[in-house]
Image 1 (tube, rainbow, N blue to C red):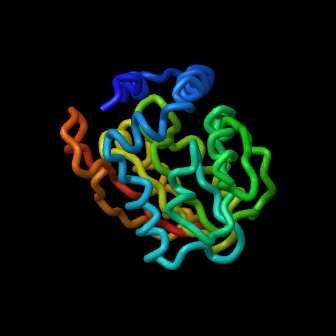
Image 2 (image 1 turned 120 degrees about the horizontal axis):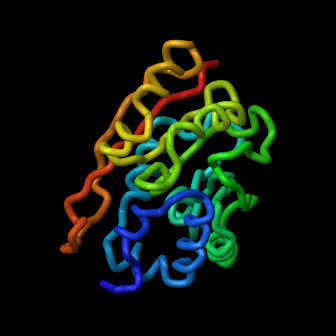
Length: 209
């Protein structure tokens, strides 16, 4: 396992500027030093759930926190746009020929996207410690078409600490989304590092029609 990827440093990110700096610095080696060497399979697990649930309800998919495109690689044949705060990460995805459009934007702010533009949303590694919390949900729902499928990973502790539970409960109570369902997934496979036993929590729901 390469030593130049420090997951604990990623979990200590404080705000958008720090996130952009950290991921710009890691972009060149992210796929090898983390995705490959750490046995990172969470994007594939989330993609499998998304497809098993029927995929997008028409229209393109938005990959939230797209990074170098690991999620897009697990969803071949779909029309996908990638949004990320790191231009260097998006440049790596572009070099692979991934994504119809790559959007550099801060998910904690207003998004430069049209209303009801997307029929599906996927995310892996973005709703986590020090990154993006439930405050982004209103903007994501704004750009979601009626019936759009959300399949987004987080961590159990993050789900509690960053307000996802109450935010999803309120959205469901207000009729904005279907009642959410949850799946537990392995984040890593065949790994022996300190985080090898970590599991993820996938949030699955649709925007109300």
